Length: 180
Picture (cartoon, rainbow, N blue to C red):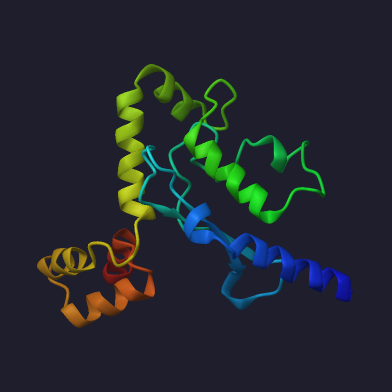
């Protein structure tokens, strides 16, 4: 059991060592056990996902190889090509590479794949919108989000605390504000 723990710590260190360069990292999900991990992937440069950071709590990105419905990912190393030689970092870097080079001929989401193949500019605009709406830093545009919700008639202190409770997700904040 000690060997497993040591291997896990080594895997964490290796994955997080150069996260500013690689754009990937891993952490325990809400401080849970080693069996509940959260990966973070920076949107690759020169893609519609650039500038975004993908986390487990976001809706799935608009991508031909990722299901819009349930987030299932069409990537061989996550299925039949998995090997014990692969690391957590390898898996995250592979997902990041998939964002850079979609395979629309082997899609997980046929609708997004067709859009990618037949109307690429709409695909790019939709993916950029998704990145802006869901994968940008919570602090990005926070004041604009506060202002927009205050203009809808919600008290500023309540807006700020609600936005903070949902990591800056404007849509989730609006849902919470309307349900209270």
